[in-house]
Amino acid sequence: MAAILGLIIGVVVGIFLKPTIPVELQPYLPIMVVAALDALLGAARSYFERNFNDRVFVISFITNVLIATLLVFLGNQLGVGSQLTTAVIVVLGIRIFSNASAIRRFIFRG
Amino acid sequence: MASGKSPLHSLRRQNTKDQVNDNTMTGSFPVVRKKPLKSHHSMGAKLLTSCMVALLCAMLGFGYVTQQRNMQSSYASLSETELVRLLDETNTQVSQLESQKLKLESQLQSIQSAADKQKEVERIAKENEVTSGILSGRLPAQGEGVEITITQNSEHVDSSTMFNLLEELRNAGAEVIQIDNVRVVTSTSFVDTDNGLICDGETLSQPYQILAIGDSNALQNAVEIAGGVGARLRAQLKAGVDVEQKDMVKITKVRPTREYKYAKTVE
Image (cartoon, rainbow over all chains, first blue to last red; front, side):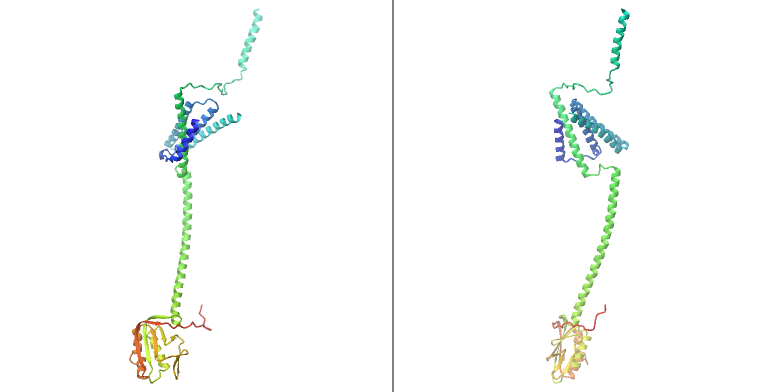
C-alpha cells in the first residue's frame, strides 16, 4: 500500500516539478531506476511468497541502487562505462524477468 | 535366546538404516518455510519502515519520470556509435540540402535573369513604342520648340518653299512638326492650288501656323539664318514670318497608324 502510494506521489512530483538532473548524475540515473525496479519486483515476489519483510526491502533497495551505481562509476573510471552499464542492465533485466515469472506463477497457480 | 534375539535386533537396525538411506529429501531443493517470519517490531518502527518504503518508491517514480523527460530532450544518453551515426546522417543531410540549395539558387538566378531580360525587352519595346509613336504621329507630343506664323501677302507661298521650310526645320532637329491642323509625318506632301496649299488632303488656312518641337534656338536659327528660308519668304514672297520661341509647345494632332500592305518586318 505504502509502495503504491509512494510510486504515485513520486511520479506526480516528477511530472509537476520538471527537474533537470545534473550532468554528472546523468549516466547513473537510468541504472538507478532499473536497479530500483529490480528491488521492487523482488519485494513483490517475496510479498506473494508471504515472507515480505519491509526492513529487508529497504536495505535491498538501497544496496541494489548503490551497487549498480558504483559498478557503473567504476566502469566509467576504468573506461568501460558503456560496457559495464550494458552488463548491469542485462543482469538486472534477467533478475527482473525471473522475479516477474515467479510472480506470474503465484498469480496463475492460485 | 541370545542368538534368537540377535537377528531380530539386527533386522530392526537394518530397517532404520534403510529408512535413512531411502530418504528422498536430498536437500538440494529449497524448502519453503511453513511459517512466515513474524516480525515483532513496535508500532513506531513499523510506521518508520513503511514510510521508508513509500519514500523509496517515490524516489523510483521520480527518477523514472525525470529520466524519461531527460531522454526526450538530449543526446547525452546516446552511445558514441549512435552519436557518430547521427552525426553522419546529419552531415549527409546537410550536404544534400546544400546541393539542393545550390541547384535552387542557380534556378532562381536563371529565372531572375530571364525576368530581367524580359523586363529589358519590355522597356525597350515601350521606348520604341513611344519613339515610333511620336515619329509616326500616333501619339501627341509636347516640349520646348518654336511657333512660326507665316502671313501670306500678295504672293502665294508655294509648296516648294513650304517644303524647304520643313526640311530646314528637320535638319535643325525638329522632332515633331504640325502645320495648322496637320501632323507632319514622313509621308506628308504639299500640293499647290489656286486657293492656297493643300497638305495631306486638307486645305491650309492662312496665316499658316507651324508648330515644331526641338531645340528652340536651333530651330529659330534655321529659319532666320541669312539667305535661309525665312529670308526667302520675306524677300521673294513678301510674306510675314514670325518665329516665336516657346518653352512648351503642345502638338495634339495625331495620325492613325498606317496599315502596311507590302512591307513586312524582317524577322
